[in-house]
Length: 346
Image (cartoon, rainbow, N blue to C red; front, side, top):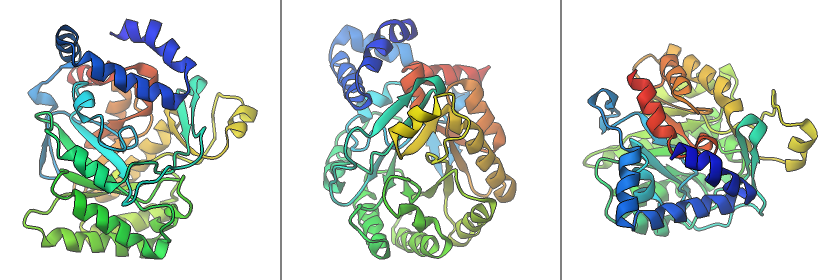
């Protein structure tokens, strides 16, 4: 499968626009899974389960510590397909209460020299009601689902809490955990919600609602890699005070430092969040900083530049309990998850 992807599929997909390639890849897998012999081959090629990979985190049993980061499946349409690639958990969204188109195209760009992506998608999604309908469909066995929630672009920050509450209440029966996304750089003003006062108010509101439920669910906070140490200290204080279940570190970065892609080309692509290999080191630094101060009391999900078992192990050794991938799937192909699991077992 790896040879097929590198020699045939990847060159073809890289000829297409990133968004078009994304849609075609998923369509290919959906068709293949309907053909009995191809379905059996795919399931066998990607399957690797081992009790040593299992993790108990946030009170949930993960069959392995490798997850799909938010943004890949914004609308919950790919859950059956992605479950067959061997993930332990999938995160859908970011979802907003109302459907929105996101930013104008083109808005997703590859940087092959850096194994990176730049995106300014802008929370494009089909809305909360659509996602709920997808999540009501039968779920593949053994897979955990997280719901990544955000606010609509047109919602002012002083009314943002209502958007997050709407998403929380609607998704509660259907997801295993929540992620509060206030760290995307592609919705104007969103990162202002990472400031201490509005963030604490938002998280406390969600936690209060959560505790009213018969069985509360884990709520995590996804943070940007561009925060200063002082801002990270504020995050730590808020997490402790609100008794948040965990942190996802990190989202994409607005930094363009250290890229191999020529600066004029990068500049021409415009604004957006950078993900992939250039984010690896900074994401690991943030994980280590948080873990050294929070210890084992608050689990961390590490994400950013994980393209191999070595990269995943780096995040885990820095203090992450689970990890997520996205951009590296584009460059390494669908066998990446199995290779990471094999590496963690050796």
